Length: 172
Image 1 (tube, rainbow, N blue to C red):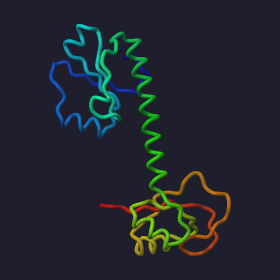
Image 2 (cartoon, rainbow, N blue to C red; image 1 turned 60 degrees about the vertical axis):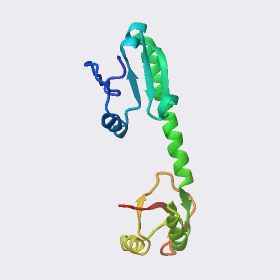
Image 3 (cartoon, rainbow, N blue to C red; image 1 turned 90 degrees about the vertical axis):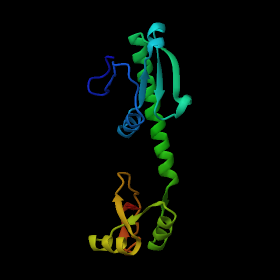
């Protein structure tokens, strides 16, 4: 398959052996999006089976895709675009349903107690960040690129805050 150089990898097995459960799990860990299965009947019919990582079991399998390189390449590119879009939408939905806007340390503690992440105004020092960690068990995970344009009150110090921080608890 002649896809964009360096953007996709194709790994094949030509000895006729099937993939093991451990190997399939490893493929999921490294983010293999599609699996193209070619058996003896597929070769004789000139078609392949394509399995999607993001749709489990038989629902994610499509049978009878032509082995013709231009058709297979177009099909794979379209499925990869669909998978990327699907994974992005799932991540955004998960993010939106698991983050809570807070404006005080008590609200931060409450959000974290429900297993959520918290987003709140921040203008405190490194020492205050350590204090938040000691009091709540949470740390600042990031400062989003998109910041609000209105000055709010820092949830820790009560001082004016011009940026937002995302807080989360590390579960080890």
